[in-house]
Image (cartoon, rainbow over all chains, first blue to last red; front, side):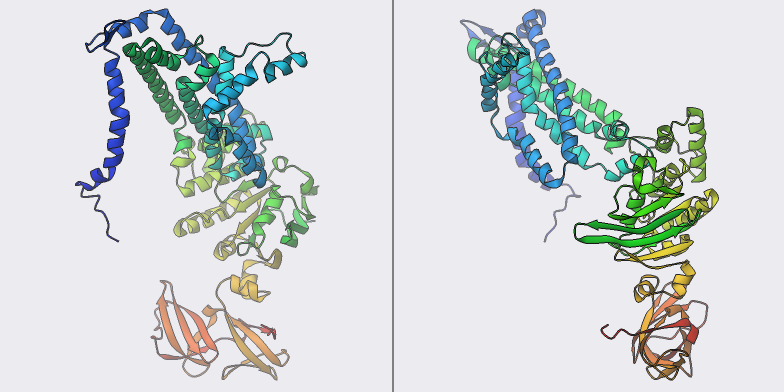
Length: 290
Length: 344
């Protein structure tokens, strides 16, 4: 077998990285740069897109409270979805990791199974359940928990429920991965030192899986904030979030520059939040991570 | 009654009996090692004492209490795990303080006892280090301090030195022994390393297939192993075929006194370091290989009864060259004769 001389540098590393690099530049970098440029162009009902540089779109987003409200709603939905997903997903992963072998596999597949179904199909399923004559409302009314059907469709509650269902598996996978790395003897050590079950969980297990919980949360937040299908189907045209707003600007109003500005702002906001929280997690849990 | 008493302790996993009716009495302050190859049941025994594994049968009694009825958290034992099992998100001091916190020890006393424990294991000044920033030997010491700080009735050590390199392991053996002597805690060590068991223990329990084959002081076990398994497991030993008649053991063409032994075939066990070279008498052979090992030489000598291992000290005297002819001799009392099993 001939070995590739990497240490001497030369063209080999570039040739090896080339295809991936080209793909990245071609389908990620170029469209983003073009979208950013597009957001500085002008647009008019009759003149269409004008390739001049103007801050008009950005000024509009910054001053019109309509946009502020939508971005605030996007952030609120994403945050709520993240918190609920963590509260459900983290204990779920812990319980799974404690199950005996045959059941553990079965339940892991059940938990991750939803990922195999298209988001659109799953969300339409929720739409059926959510309606005023849907299964959930019929059950709630029959059981006497509520007097009149609860409004789920076209509400933030509905969107959050739908998103949580879609995104919980990401928390489970992430926490599961960090639980797998735990040394089972560490729990035994804590028990032998006199720790009760709950104390061991809180003081010993939780801090060690915290990086897993937080990285799962970051993934969920990013996906929830940029989700399109769920808010589009359950939220509808009235309850807009950033992604559905950009979509409407592009395809309904045909104001591409404004849509581009919305999309770029969402991208910048998300990148800032993700990089920021990642930094925090890495610094705070440096000792657990290494 | 002894301090820690295991009575007919048995553990079965399905059809497999891992520990088979093990009985053992450990005195207060004693250092006992469970020694055996992997799968001999030594770790399972330790885990039953610790409470992580429930015995299928038998009892464990500690200072008059039936341990099997007490939860692991309430047994008050100090355990050092093979992986050390330090809490990675806590500093050395926080690791050590955990057991005290669980016992509701007041903060000022905690601080004092943690400092004492760190000093005991020679880690004063390392209190704010995280485990990942410590070497294997230092982590090992923290684990030991964490186990000792709660003043446990019994200290359980599960292969504590096996992750250390050879030199460090020897240093830690000496230190472990000194610390155990200082605090006087009754200690049970699980190990597969015979050197470690011999260096540290007051008594060794040699285990094989879930049973105790020989329980005795290290020197005693080494000098007169109870079974062939024990003889082979502890140190190197030569087993040679002997033919006994009229109180004389014949090995090849040489003879040794075997007073009191019945006539017939027997196995003669001789430690390699007890074999000397002679000019005139003894078992004749040719040196096949000669290996220098620093403070001693290791020789393989081909004789008429097979290959014999000889260890001779590097004390300045001449050592036979390879391919030279030698005669091997040893004292009759350095040889153990056991009746040969026909099928073996």
